[in-house]
Image 1: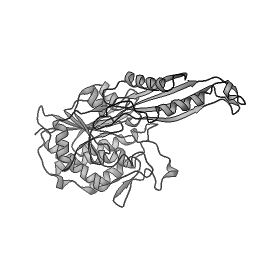
Image 2 (image 1 turned 180 degrees about the horizontal axis):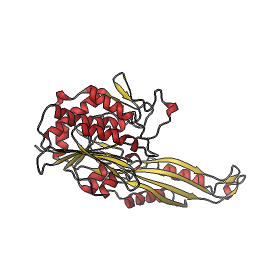
Image 3 (image 1 turned 120 degrees about the vertical axis):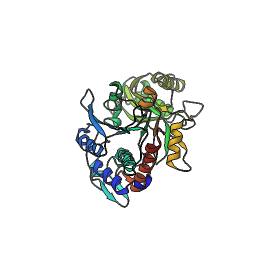
Image 4 (image 1 turned 90 degrees about the horizontal axis):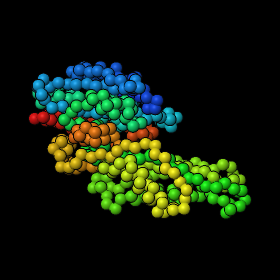
Length: 379
């Protein structure tokens, strides 16, 4: 069936999807749902539009193999993309330009190319006339880029996710990803004592104390043992602000951290590790941690037959990898226990970048892998 994968068709669909502006924020997925639903309906799927309680739409589609009680293979992909600064681009960000073997535009890699490749995988099986042993579902969702509350998590809360296995076609450079780190983001407030700028030693600078904390937390080590695929957690100090005036010792300073997490760590675990590290290194600093955001890490424990199926379909030499970032796979793995693999065309080095692109070669290779999995799942 891989011979029925059409490079032209998957490229054209990727470009078509990229040409629709679905930036999030603010959340413009409604602009694309009707065209995506039409593509899936033309591929023999029954489709429906689900709206989250906030009104953000996602597309649900199902292709039935016609066998009662057949298992379900799910593809979960997000329709939203991160914002663009159009002036920085050399091409129109939503032009969907095909040039030099690439589709260029916001979302080409992350992850409209992966969605197109998954649909092309189903189309190739249909063109080959293969009798499938499993139903195939597509959940093309809103809001992944800002946490998933209005997309996959809303579907989960509504009880609409039922599958025996799932592929999330995020850009992984055609590698089979079975684990991913999570993220704990917090604002750390540091309190000092104001005083005259001409005598800084008579007061306590919150900026100076914050600088000590920044040095203690940025790139800090939080675990003695590394995860075999994810390594150790990282901590990035991403923003800082403070002070009152140029001639006043700063009474206040605050900064934001992004502490990446490992599977099994809770928000409480991470908070405790940050506070311990800060107090061990800066016991005299007056600080308060204000948690802002947490998404869990997740993994598909190996060995697992579904991971083996993906590895076999991806080709010789494929080995499982971990991701330093998070995806909607965490909802499926952690809250529903659905075996989930992240695999798709393109690279995270292009995702969110200026002049984002995905290669036609990668799109075609991913579609062939998906066709193999669709054809063999449930056999």
